[in-house]
Figure 1 (cartoon, rainbow, N blue to C red):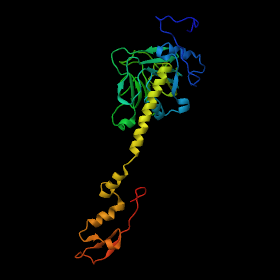
Figure 2: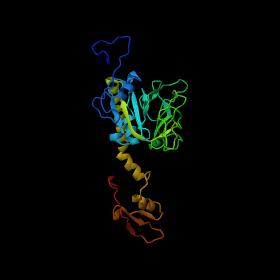
Figure 3: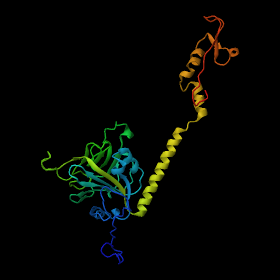
Figure 4: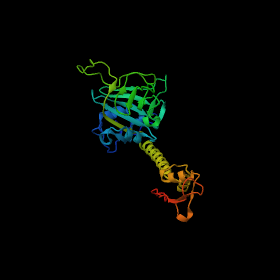
Length: 310
């Protein structure tokens, strides 16, 4: 269709579809016919057709919570694109599996890593390991699992080959692991910059974007899956906020829920020489006959708990 747009495509061939950003802005693609888009589309048929921007650091900011929220529940293939600050290199990862939070790796062999600038390289699964993709936030384990917290591809759960940390510090892009083919993701260190022109491993993020890809149908189903996931999450939050008021009041009065507001009643009931004085009104107690003190009525002030009617 690129070379012969007026001729039907042979059924024995897979058509090449140029990515369509549908007018969405990007920090990587300044024009719809960007050569970078062509390079990415050549890496997989799933990178052709309609794209939908899920996250961009340019407008969403470098926030892991926002990145996590944009990815979680999306049910279609995605491409993650990074521009690092030192050498202006562009690289990333593609995955056809829906994102989820997990302490373990998941995904399938559709996943691959790539370098797009200054040179182009594609690193596909080599069949030796299956550590394809990884998404583990610190809030899931409160930081006690001893694992890497962030988004990763390849490598191990302690140090993925391509890793974006939850704090965006100490991000890693190494050149080898057991899951994907070997090859550089980062450009060489600059001469005179302390690296001597050698290979690099760590990088700082300049720009980061995640796009839903695969064409109209894949993007639509992916967004619908995310909407459904968010709807379930909202329902669970709302359910947790609702408290059975009657049960709450019963527990409150029975002492199952402790409160200083009723501490005086519990203390008075616990004394053998105190008894309720019904004639003196609600909340009044008196020393029982035979007690250590003279008989007298004592009215203990009561307090109302806001929102409970108590």
